[in-house]
Image (cartoon, rainbow, N blue to C red; front, side, top):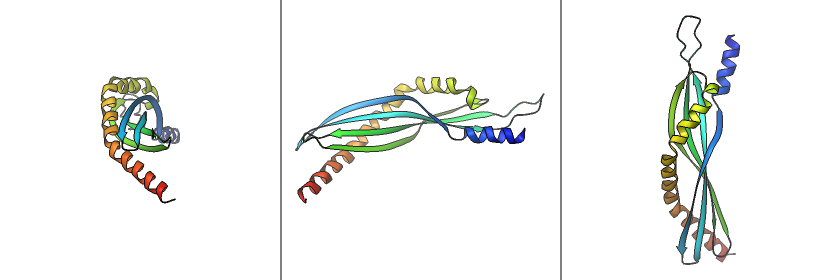
Length: 149
């Protein structure tokens, strides 16, 4: 029995699954022409099983700790047709815990994340704003390297 419990708990450490997606598109006026950037954020939930199963008559200490992250992919297209891609992750945008096994709380965790969707969209908007300068720097580097060829 202890081996089975250890194996089940080890599986719970890396149980990540996509829950939902959030997306945004922006248009930037640049001296080379308009730049359209599409951002797709996939919400990932990482779960960690903690605690132990107690013998009969004693309370269990099992808890499922979870954190949600946004894995973002940016694809931007310049007026000249060049594509600028980037991937990045914003960790720990939401977190929580539930009593019991992670496998039995997947629906409750998904509901908690869904309730926080407006917060996740706010995080996505902030990520898009932070990426703007990086995107423009990528475009300038791309233009510089194209001129030197």
